[in-house]
Image 1: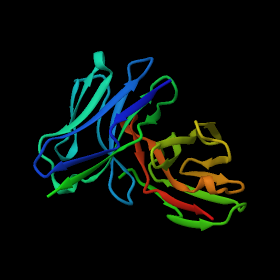
Image 2: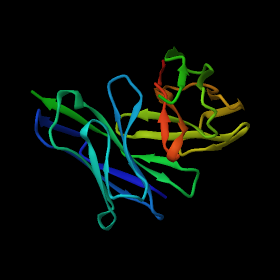
Image 3: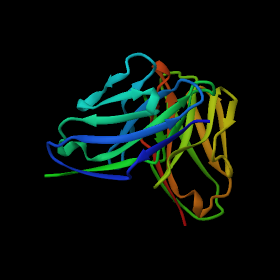
Length: 114
Length: 111
């Protein structure tokens, strides 16, 4: 069974500061991992994904994430926050042995202070 | 944009009434999924489909049924809506790279 833990349900950062969102997963097989972003009253948009190629994955809007197998982590970072980064972020793990079903973390809401 | 639409986008209904939500895709994807989103829970899988007339349960399937009579449409039915089914419902398809892409969501309120 797969599961995802996102540490911190709310993160507040200043504009221009580092954004760090933490995600730890459990999986019995090598996983596919995803970060999605949800802006208010919208659906989920794919930010980036790890599918067993490079461990450092670059996504849209300046975000990147690093897969660390030894730590079972897939933390999301952005060097410099922008006001437009205010949103909810979800980490998810895909069960490759079971129709690629996704298990999501509870989400982290990011607010950006001017 | 994965060509996914959901209807209705908003619905208010009363306890005990049946409700059907529709997901429509335009790109002939085999796999389709229904999730519900609730605060503190992220998204949880209700049911999914791996082809026409082929469906299976997810982790929160009680009180829901689904049907897929053609590739482009995946219907989610609440046979008798309850207040605990007040939620935002998202449909997704499995697209390129085995990645799921999501529709815009349906906000359902059961009074």
